[in-house]
Length: 174
Length: 106
Image 1 (tube, rainbow over the protein chains, first blue to last red):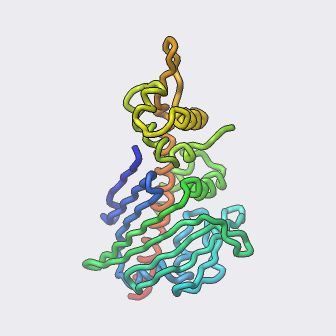
Image 2 (image 1 turned 90 degrees about the vertical axis):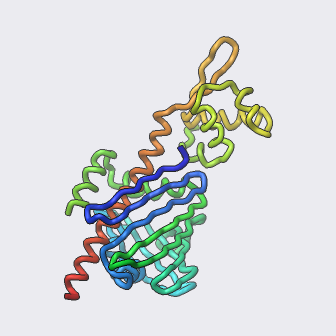
Image 3 (image 1 turned 120 degrees about the vertical axis):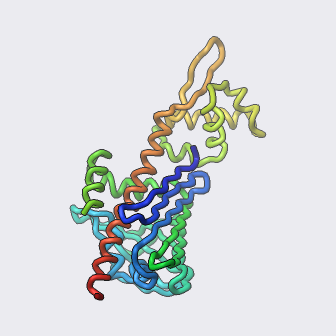
């Protein structure tokens, strides 16, 4: 009851594992990608690439600035189809190139004031036979915060659950 | 006051109560026997769980029995499923981006 464990292979036979440990307020995500490590690392750590995939459509991601170094920050917005901006700020707390990076993520207002508490993110990268595995651990100080993330994406689109699922399915078949 | 479901499960004692009464309906005294805490404290948790509509009360004679609202628990699973879908969408978008970049490099 406390844990939800969903593991399956994607259409390309790549692993996707998503587990929520509600007791520990932690989300575990593992995904494989059919690309080499340096490319996947860039996709997670370079603003121009990150903005192209990190927002679930029809939302878009807009990075105002990103300074990928320990103590550096990324200030960004998730933009709704109606143009509504939800700002967030990430501070990099640890970087081991092409292996691991950690950051602290928080909602923010448009003037870069973070709304605490936020969440701690830990990304680990490894490559085997041309397939790169990324493991993400997200620790949230509050589950309500997790709920807000979802509310923003779903209620913001004013869609029922069924509509959303149809939509996501259509996008994933693209 | 309408509380939300995540407030209900945010507390370890409340999660333990949920686990207990998931098996069968129990009276507040029977529930309290499982904890090193006061009867008042258990009552407070039961009140919060009731306000969140995660548990329901049934009167049997002079006793009140608490049991789990299974449908409400399913709401949490549905919520997790939506969250998982967001990540799935994100990663599918990343797959597309990665293969586009790989083609450009060739």
